[in-house]
Length: 104
Image 1: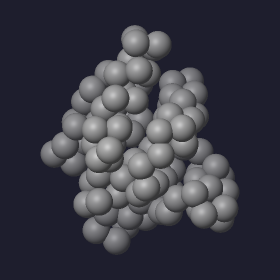
Image 2: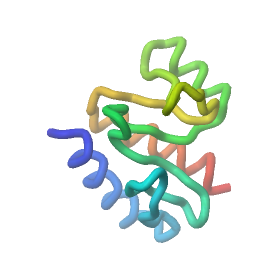
Image 3: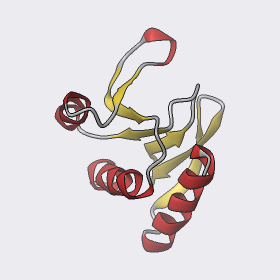
């Protein structure tokens, strides 16, 4: 399954669970938000899932090899993790972590 197909299937699942999760735009593309807060986007320059998490959690996930820094145009976004390889279980888990983080 292509990254964008998986992402939007997971988005629909999350939206059915939590009405605060809505579609929005970021960097001229579609994204998910929790209310007004950015949550995630997909495949920006082949980045796979890009999700907002606490900075320490991003560092932990990078250290364990799960993902890498999201750094469009060379600028690292400390609270954003890129997970290029589509993986339904992992992506859904990370999206739920992101909802808990940005939704508080």
